Image (tube, rainbow, N blue to C red):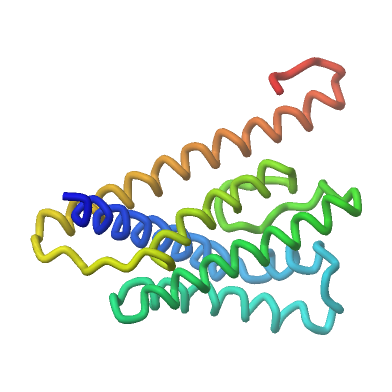
Length: 186
């Protein structure tokens, strides 16, 4: 029973992280000029590296998805996902420390400005990605178990997107309220 639950958690985390990176990569690919502009706004690299770095980030996200799909490479994919979440968190943290919070994160979901919430979000996402990176379980042989794990991962992905939209809307409301002097929820 414990092995089955661990295998289901493994598949759910794999599915969730794969869907998340697929969504992020597609969002970045569909508007590459805007994404490369977000990369430039972080001011972590010279301007001459903006385009290659942007392309490399998208390639790393797509590679992560590909690696997560196959049982033989899932640990590499999960480790790469953890590394990407860490790298994105470091970029966000550096800019927050510089006082540069009015930068669009460029994460690939709802439009959000840099904040400590994004750092917390990346830490939580890294925990999800670390499950398949650390846990060693065999893939369930029962089709229903696989479907349940994938459905759980898809449900996590949908919940993540809803929470992401709520956080983005709350951030925009706070920014709007600053100009009007009205107090909006914190």
